[in-house]
Length: 352
Image (cartoon, rainbow, N blue to C red; front, side, top):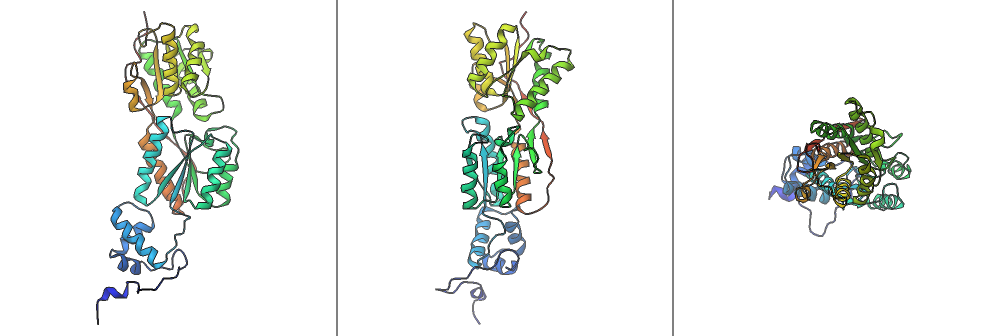
């Protein structure tokens, strides 16, 4: 006779040997050691919601004592992003991390030049360290002719991955994206309703999937309103303040009264170009951006923009990742999420 819990406690000086992975450890044994129900152990193992952080830690300690090896390689999800200086990517990474955390997963953010050697190096290093999955978040997945080596490295090791805002060609993996065609429609509709007919576009570089889609959406929206000369009012440049300034410098001599920009940085560059010419925004020129950040409330003037649905993108991304990590089937399709207009003070009626 004695304390029944002693049967489950490790004996002093005894080191438990590692057991084989997945399926050889009884839930009842783990539950008894952790002091929780078998259902709770199951939820932790399957990375489901509904388990507090402290309870999850109890179960994880019990699993470690018993020597359970998870059937996935690590608990880290690799987030490959083009840069963190752009507020939209920092916001997305934060949101994805928040959505993954309840499942016992942790995100590691790797800022890379899309399609670069750095991107491949990050993947190679993290594969050796052990990762559960990877996300190409507006990285090489946005390039029309991206080198396939990065994703092929993941495929060769059986690591699931997905993309945000653009799909790889010839890759059957899930994708979640903002509806860039709808974003352009929202921007053009807003300016058209304000009386603008000579609307230009500061667009992103050719071959970038989101940029190309926004141009397609812009041209469709303009054509639907009978504004047939829209192709002459599209200037492609880099996603940057300087890119927007240079693009606007080409558009302003063409007599545009409004500009749709492919990013908030480009929109701020367009405003800078207008100001240098002695124009006032929005009195003489309306400008609308794309992405959105709380910082835009503090620009001069506060920037009207089309907001990417960061929370919805992150939720969809995390849900899909967890499903793949659990080795359950997912649809290899692209889910499009609608953006929304954030009205501030950089757009106004057409000048008279």
